[in-house]
Image (cartoon, rainbow, N blue to C red; front, side):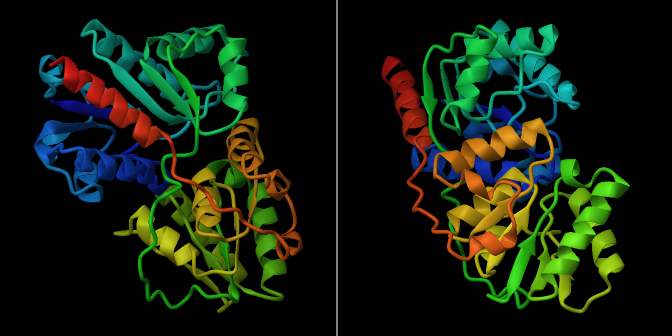
Length: 342
């Protein structure tokens, strides 16, 4: 059986790439070989390095990808089914699904956040087409995604509410010397740092933290790295360090975070890494899209009060144990159904 995996990965975002990491681990356990798996993302060389995958099976388009030799499709990686500034992302996914549907390929869509929607008819139509086409859709929240699915009148064939695909990313031993229990892991997103006013606010937050703790600035994307370096230079404090994520993967970053006392962050998967590692974390949600994702993850755990809260509130926070996401079991059942038909 030949498998095509596509979605939001290969963009040098270690959070979304962590989702595919866990899927690949599960897929290999099902007997698939690397030569049977094609990855369709943004940067083939990066994907080949990050996922240790054959470069000839990493694609940025359909030119060298023969869909007639593909049996099934897995769609994974983050929240792209929505209306937001980056609506091109939804348009590209819609185009991919149009091509896939022309070949009548079955699709399992995993670990999504659906929404916000209901504001743009074209986006709603594109989202509805995708959701209605897939065989199985799993989402990573309790009711937010279901609300937007109902709002646009989509009718998924099989629909399940579970956890993010990356919550069970394991920890490894790390000797990184700047993460300890006197250190706060600090992360930003594009939405929390795209104006001078927001950057000034982030600097003030770090200044406040540095009165009591050390700060480790942790990017999840090259853009974060640049902006966090600007913050570090502005702070000019030896107790503020910046993690260089070049040549690091999600498993490395999560393990470094796990050694810290608390987290404060803007990216969804920074929050997932913290909470799944047992580290209390304040999430910064400064736009509707981020709020929907972060609330959806935290509300399932009874931790929604951590959104836009103060670090002083973290002392008595108890992090519940997170079970294994259901998406992998459902994917395996879906694959085995296909194998039984052959």
